[in-house]
Image (cartoon, rainbow, N blue to C red; front, side, top):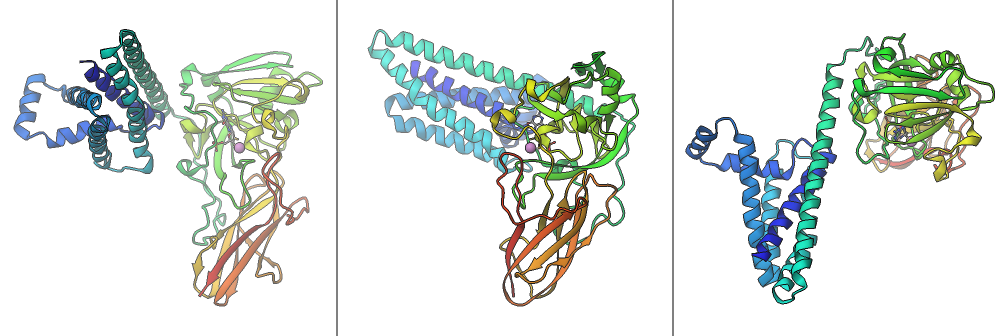
Length: 496
Ligand SMILES: Nc1nc2c(c(=O)[nH]1)N[C@H]1C(S)=C(S)[C@@H](COP(=O)(O)O)O[C@H]1N2
Ligand SMILES: [Mo]
C-alpha cells in the first residue's frame, strides 16, 4: 500500500507542477488538459454519449477527473513496481511521459514553450519517485521509517495542493485583468505611420512595432495582474500636495499621443531590444505641477505594484519639450498586461531601466542622493540617457546574397536628440550617405537604406549615425554595463 501511495503522490505532484508551470507561462493548455483531450478523442462515441447522458454537461470536469484517476492508478502502480525494482518504476513513468508528449503534440499549435510544463512535470517525477518510494520501502522494515514516510508523503501532497492553488489563483487574477482590459474603451488613436517612415527594404524591421512583437524586459517572474478598478497612483514625497489618482480620473484627463521609441540599456550593438510604438497617456509634468514640486528635488522614484523601482531625473519629467507620460495605451490598445497594464511610464530619450516603470503605482519626488533603485543597486548608472546607435537589418550576419546591386538598410536612433545622418561603408571603402525615412519628431528611430554593388565573395558592411547634436558614432566599443553599449554595427556576409 505504501509504495502505491508514494507513486500516486509523485504522480499528482508532477501534474501539479506542470499545470502551475503552464499557468505561469500563460499557456492556453497544460499536459493534463492535453491528455484529457486525447482521452476524449479516443473515447468511443457510444461510451461518450452514455457518459454525457449520465452527467449532462459535466464533460470537461469529468474528463479531467477521469484523467486524474487514471494518473493516480498508473503512477501508484509505478510506485509499486519501483519498490520492487527501481527501473520498472521509471519505465512506467517514461510511458506516461510519452502519453503526455502525445497530448502536447495533439495541441492545435504547439510552440517550444508548450513542452516546458511537461519537462517540469517529468523532472518532478524523477526527483520524487525514488525519494518517496525509498521512504515507503524503509517504512516496511524500520520502525522510525513510518513517520518519515508519513511526513514526506503528506508534506509533498500539501505542497502540491499549495502549488495548484497558487497557480489557479494567479490564472484567475490574470483572466480578470485580461477581461477588464478587453472591455476597456479609451479615447485613443492607433496612430497612422507617417508616409515615408518605412523605406521598404525587405527584411528591415517595420518602423512601428506591433504590440505582440514589442521587446519585453521583466524581472518579474509572474507579472502583476491589476484591473483598472483596483489601480491607483500615489504621488508624494517632496511635493506641496500629495495626490492619489484613480484610473478613471487619469483616463478622463487630456491624453497626449506620441510616437516614442523605447530601448533597453542591455541592448548590444546590433541587438533587438528596441521597439517603436504610438503611445497615449497623461503628461507627467502636468501631474507634478498639480502636486507642486518642492525646491531641492532632482529625482523621481517610481515603483511598480510588485516593488520594482527606478529613478528618473526630475528635469526629464518636467521638461516642456519632452512628453514624458503615464501611458495607458500602446498603438491604440490598452497596454498589454506584460507591458505594464494598466499604467506605465514612458520617457523619450531615456533607457527603460531609469524611466519605463510598468504596473506603476507609486511616484515619489525625491533626491538621487536619498535612494537607489533596482538596477542602480546592481552596478548600472543612475542616469540613463539613450546613446546614439545604428543597426543593420539587411543583410544579416552570415547571410549569403546574390552578387550585383543590392539594397541594404536598418534603423538608427538617438531618442530626443534626433538622427541627422546615417552612413554605411562596404569593405572599408568610402562612407556613403544613406537615405533616411521620414519621422514625426526626434523621439523615434529612423530607418535608413542604401545600395551596394557586390562582387562575388566575402563582404563587410558597417553603419554609423550622426545625431542632431553633431555627434558621430565612433568605433569605440563599450559594454552594455554601466550605461549602454557603443560601437559600429558590423555585418559579415557573402555574395555569389
Ligand atoms: N515593473 C517593471 N518595470 C520595468 C521593468 C521591469 O522589469 N519591471 N523593466 C524595465 C526595463 S529594463 C525596460 S528596458 C523596459 C522594457 O519595457 P517593455 O518590456 O514594455 O519593452 O521596462 C522597464 N520597466
Ligand atoms: Mo532595460
